[in-house]
Every structure is written in C-alpha cells, then in structure tokens.
Length: 253
Image (cartoon, rainbow, N blue to C red):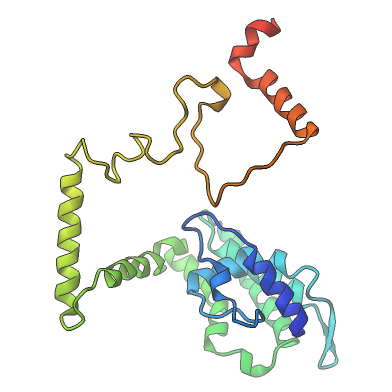
C-alpha cells in the first residue's frame, strides 16, 4: 500500500523510537538492510507496534486511495484495529465495552476487506472476531496469554550449555542460579542485585548534602552529552527553584 520511498520514511521513523527498558524490543534491529521492511518481530512487539506506534506513525504516510473502485481509508482502519486490541488488552474491562468491541471488530474487518485481497483473511485474522467472546468467558487477557511463559522459556534456553543433554543442562543451570540467589541474600560485603541499589552503585542515588529539589534519585539512559542551556531555560530553572525549593522559603518570607 505504500511506495518504497514512503516505506523507507516509515522505517526511519521506527528506528528513531526509544522504548523504556523492557517495554519492547529495539525496532531498529528489525529493519531490513535496504531500510524498507520490518522483519523478525516477536508477537509482543507486534502488539506494541499495532496498539501504540502505527496509529500515530502512519499519519502523513497513508492517504485515501482508490482501491478496487472503493475509497478505503487505510489509516483510520488500522487506527481502529489498534484501538480494538488496546481496549481488549486493558487491565480493567467492562461488559458494555466488550459488547461494543464485538460490534466494532466486524465493521473493522468489513473496511479491511475493501482494502486487502481475500488471501489476507486467513484463520488467524478471523480469530479476532471471537476474542471478545473469549474475554467474557475467561476474564482479562493478562491471566491467559503466554508472554511470561515465553520470556521464562527464553531465560532457560539461554542457560543451556550442553546441547546433547538439554533438560539436564537447563536443570543444572537453574539449580546453580537458585542456590547463588539464595546465598547472595546473606552476603553483605559483596555487591549483588539485592543490595546494589542500596549501596548507590547504580549511580542514581542523590547526593547527601544536596538541596531538596535534587534529593530524588534519577536513572539516566543512553550516552551523555553536554549542551549549553539557553537564557529562557535558565529563567525557567530559576523560577522552578524559587517556587519548589524548601531552602528558599525563609528568604521569600
């Protein structure tokens, strides 16, 4: 549906996206060598892409087109599909919302049928029609999806050392990790994952004698850079200090 130039622009947009740690995979690693395709995404990354990225990222790239004699609005349809899955996967669900989603997904598929050929609508695409009914029977999807199990299985797979004895290698690594984790709870003079932040080794702890507005910890991400603040930014900084710093109150009064 997009020309190659538009696909390259969209892929460049996906490369520039930065997610919080653990939220999703780095999309820049899944862009093809010519910069026009996204490939190798996991299921969770596809959910994030559909629910959060595409409804905003397709703006400006997709316009109304004449497809098979019918004017199909691709952007609005993709945005509605992303909103459907976002509401379906939300933490709190209401029965009236689920009933509305049952009606909306049928209309969304009718719009998609005006845009994509019949070969696009396989059994996995049709499965979305039955998801609201499944939610009514089983409850929120967080209690039924496989992401935590797949993530745990990935941890076991990375701990494998002997390919000839897969189960024994994973069991031995799990027992060693469990033993070391238990012992590390009783070690005080060695930095572990249980006491590392408490000792301030992560670099995000406040300085002891700092003023109140800087006493909260901050976790930095990415490489460091030095920029000179503008006069407008300095004025904002002074205003914030005067209105939020406890040490300034005696002078203001």
